[in-house]
Length: 160
Image (tube, rainbow, N blue to C red):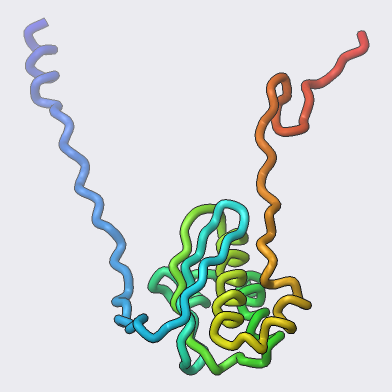
């Protein structure tokens, strides 16, 4: 019995090594004083978009667009307002987006870019409106209802 106590005292667990946070690439400071500001929304995502004359660089949350949105479909969604207005390399974008998933965030950035373009160049409104980029997509997830498993999914029915 005495031996069991001694071995228990010797086997003390060592603390796990502290986790180190992943280092982000340094973010270039951008002056947003002369930028055109707009807010875009989609599902649960909200994007604050700053549009300024430049070379076509798009930065989202301090990261290049191609790194933040790795799926080509999401990159294409963000580039749509520039394609419709033929302004692919005319403006730089700095966007801060939060909430929701990647698809909602891409839609929010697209909505914000469209609104900022329309604010900066009012003559682009007709093209952006015809493409449907200025309208806020109001579709959101339906809430779960009482007595159901999900929003519309009912419990399984057994006749016998």
